[in-house]
Image (cartoon, rainbow, N blue to C red; front, side, top):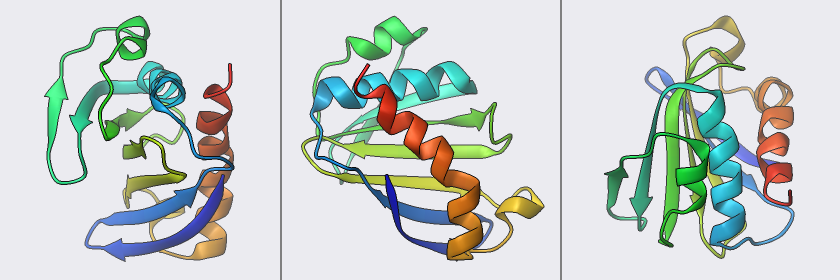
Length: 132
């Protein structure tokens, strides 16, 4: 996965990432299940770019059985990054959006190089989960 850009708005860093390949719903659900398993108080939203709705899920297996939609968002507090995080996957596209709270020094600035070093391996792990 490649970082396209990052910007800071208030207490959040907004970033866009490009997947190696466009992916379908099944692959998105696999990545979302991995992120879901890592998060404290995870929440999933499905829908389209304009409107999403919260979906009650209790475990990774339920994430894998979600009905297809235009996008899937996983949000909560990342156990790995130790900050609030939201990741949105878009069906049939190579676009992923990630929003990270500027809650630590590591995520205090929207510096492309520094942000990429902090997030790239995490985002690559999500992409690799798509192909398991």
